[in-house]
Amino acid sequence: MSTFTDPLNRRVFVTKAAQSLLGVTAASQLTGKALAIPGENTSPLKQVPTARNVIYLYMNGGMSHLDTFDPKPDNAEVMGLTKTINTKADGIRLSENLPLVARQADKLAIIRSMSSTQGAHEQGQYFQRTSYTLRSSIRHPSMGAWLEKFQNRGNPTLPGSVMIGNESRHPGAGFFEAKFAPLMINDPESGISNVTPNSWFTQDRLTNRLGVAKRLDQKFAETYDVKNVRAYSDMYDDAVKMMKSEELKAFDLDAEPAALREKYGRERFGQGCLLARRLVEHGVRHVEVSFGSWDTHNANFTRVPELCDELDAALSTLLQDLESRGMLNETLVVLATEFGRTPEINVNDGRDHHPSGFSCVLAGGGIRGGQVYGATDEKGDKAADKPVTIPDFNATIGYALGLPLDQVLYSPTKRPFTVADKGKPLTQLFG
Image (tube, rainbow, N blue to C red):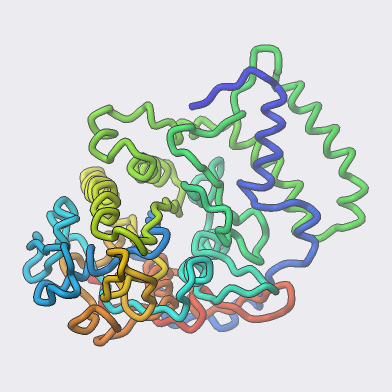
């Protein structure tokens, strides 16, 4: 964990927490709040949750379903250089690029009939994370924000959700109060910077400086006495509470055995998965880890195996680690991507964007392992059996968490929204 001796770094931490921990600047958050009529439209699908936490692994750039979770062993023209292997689950075959995950297939529910309406990266990623299409007039909440909005923060001294990776365009809290945005961490091994003072920068000095800041902001806060301005002020209290928390040790990967760190993989994604497990263990309820780019327009059959080496080690170890600690039953592990890649192999030995058929994966958190849901056609071109939309997939996550899927909340412009738009949960996956 990083240690800084300059007392100004403490101020840096508090300031950055306004933009990262709560994702807000005061000027950008003067536009009201989300409203709801208590009890209105409460979802008949709301259930006792099967999962308390989510570890959400996002494959940036469009992961090739054909070279990972939906190979077509009888179609050599489509598969190119990629071969298939048997798995621990009877009747399920995966790409040879995922040998370790294949041994964990009895824990997986592989959804092979995903489809999206968005074929560009930014729009597809936004849609996958929010269930709504990207618009210039509004920003929609991500699943971590919905979870914290409807339910309690797991650990009162740590953020409700954390995003591990370089995701500057993450939708975060959307139109919800800024306190529901995730804490953004670029490098999982760096810990949280600017939280350790030097010997002379005492608690009294910090308290005095925060007091001065509040007095300077007092007139502004009184003039614009709305919820999101108060949230900006509350950010200081949350940041200071976090700086004092003994739970900050959750961010320190040096506490883990070297052998386990090696097993996850020493790259950022593997260490991000290990950090995600530590954070969930300490009460953070939603952790996202991003990985890629899987945008393999060129050299698909060179690049995908390289990416799969990291994914294979990290995902297989995460599942084993959660299971050995008794955490898998209450932790939903999600592997998602914005779209797949074309069955056609282009002139650059690559595959292009392909939203009409691709795969996502669920494990743990009440999901019945060792199953495949839906299918693409014989080429892997289109979702041919039991098609699943992005909102359906997100509704399934919300269902596992016990969220009220049909309860309407209103944006500052008084437009109605639900957790997963019109998506229907895949209840058949549970059991």
